[in-house]
Image 1 (cartoon, helix red, strand yellow):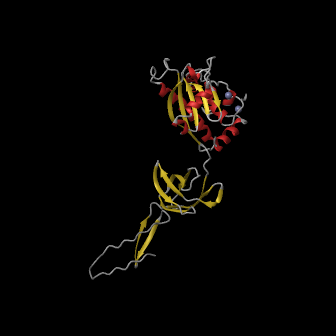
Image 2 (tube, rainbow, N blue to C red):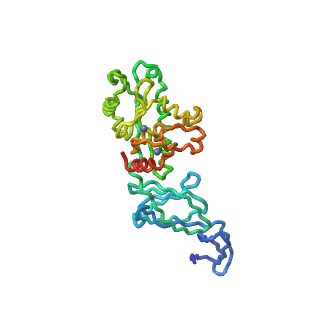
Image 3 (spheres, helix red, strand yellow):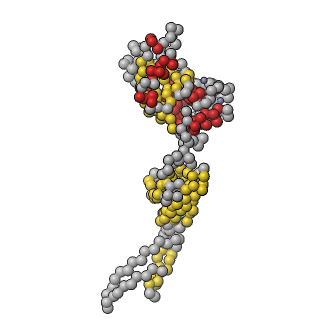
Length: 331
Ligand SMILES: [Zn+2]
Ligand SMILES: [Zn+2]
């Protein structure tokens, strides 16, 4: 019961206010020293409490920040104790998206949906997943060209937007694939540079000396700031599709652009992700298979097949664990 002492002179009146947060939405009776009245609570606040813990060891509390959002707007934010304990009170009933961000390194952001009814008291132990090791890869692209050719940068300034669009399209497919398997991974294109190769980079039989090119690329700062590299060649650059251990892939720009057309349905019966194939080699899929539509099977899909797969990559039972395990271990 709440009390307030009020002193009144004869004939005087003073307002007295009492504040209460009711537990249920209903009509309440109030009495003030023999006088009675009532008020109706139209809404009762909810409460959320519990601990945030390590999903791989639920006895270990993890300090974190918990946010409850509606429509993308954060409505409640609470930092837990050092051992993960939290109480969020006075929550307006409704549906929320919860986001938990650990304040300790090594954990991935964790989100959940939660709905509170009127006055509900919810105890929730939130298990925060560990971030996968080595799951974020910085991708450097190099446009390999021969000076003086029509698709060299001086004659074809659009080269950069073409390389970016092609590489990012396929890198996104790979990112979507790992994320669809519950791995918090990413592959972001962090640099894109033109690299001229003159005749000294070619053997007498006209083949690009890839080892020599890699040696030259390794001197560039962008190489050191990347985890994986893709050498996207112009028409005559000799960058036929291949993977060179441990981190580098080669392919022609025209090949990737035809892949994209196939996967977008504007080139018939040619849906295929060359980058997924060559990155497959880097991520422990050393051998090819015959398991269409696995990228390691090197078979074109029809657009209808690609659509029926939800436009998502699919690695076979042999290659899926190899690829995903290596992805998580890091290169
Ligand atoms: Zn191959
Ligand atoms: Zn396979």
